[in-house]
Image (cartoon, rainbow, N blue to C red; front, side, top):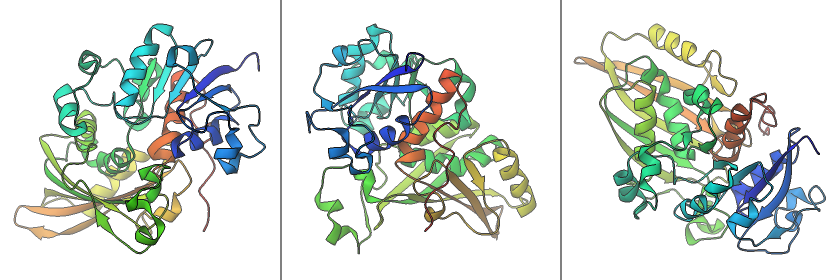
Length: 353
């Protein structure tokens, strides 16, 4: 234990916290030394996250001020709601601890967009414009992450949709309007029950929410432009799906009429040839069941007929919202930041079926 990094998890009772613990407890270079929360105080980790029963009996959920929670720690993983997290970060920055933040509070670079899509002014707008936090998507930002001290881990929809479109962005072929519909599992709504996640209503239902106004819209646009996209505009309709985990995204874009399937195949292969967690599938289209419970993403496309000067491409992508869309990607970026093997605790495939 003496040579391991001491980690604190601040906000450990949610589904994201559970997934972080499930993997960090077996990380060869990490000791989870402390877990804090605002509920279930005094309970053992396994009493709240039943899959961890007997694996972390030395840890109980503690209620501590953030500055106290990070004392003696090397890294802090923050698994708290948006708006709350930014205030916690301001309390712990002076401690010198490394930070991996799973909220949306430091992903954007434009404070005005943050205020518009999150509904509140950011408490430290200069930290956004100065880029104090590095966007933790290794497929886009690996070299910057290696030099980072503070990581803003991407959102679940943002990860799935952006990675689905990234081959076109990197090939400088992503221009104009993008229309995306993406369905997500109920765990994306958090551990506390709500009317929209109540099983009798969710299990046999499809419904949209925040159409064209979801907070991941500016994050997706920012990410794709950083990858090489031109002048783009995203219209995004999220859908609540009757499944616990997973995201399925379909993004519709237009490319020049001369574009061939062979050209797109080469672009997809080139984009993902060296990436350990993105699979370009060609014998079928991406499916949620192939990636659920894992850190893997599936990417694919369908090419439509010529209409005038363009033809339509539909980019399909799937991911687990709690793993690659949450805790898994956070650990992946942490591994890169610390110089560890990138796939530590993340290699295993999903469950089948």
